[in-house]
Image (cartoon, rainbow, N blue to C red):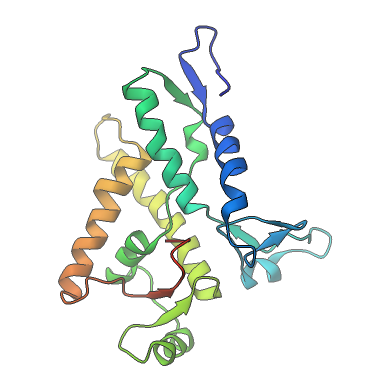
Length: 208
């Protein structure tokens, strides 16, 4: 692990991230997004990015929206013992993002901040055969939902920090005690029998 101070009291998060990616990328299913012959895990093609890319800038990854939710969750979790047990501090933590998953994203849908387009909603309802729409993890609607969740959590984080009156709050704390908890509570009120997300993801469990 790369240390960024002479006394060895700080660690660089980008080095830790490289280690996690090197170790974990090979375990992802081989039928996922592939770039240069390598499966890249929780990163998905998105039609919107394809149409926005210029001809000159297009490459194998220009239409891919990365998330790496489970790997980032692991990074957030493992940072804690380094701080609390070893007394080390991290630098570059701002490079980690929010975690785009059903509790965070479901909160914004349940609160009416995000809504599905009519065509997408109808397709999802047809797929599920129930009153909740369902999509595959790689469908554009899910990738867009997760991408918008990232943007909205970032905006929410800035608002919450502004109201903390100088108290420090990490992104991980906002996620665990804020959007995750709120997402579960709102889901339980709206769907007490299942407590499920307002959007169902057909997945093998390696994304969420």
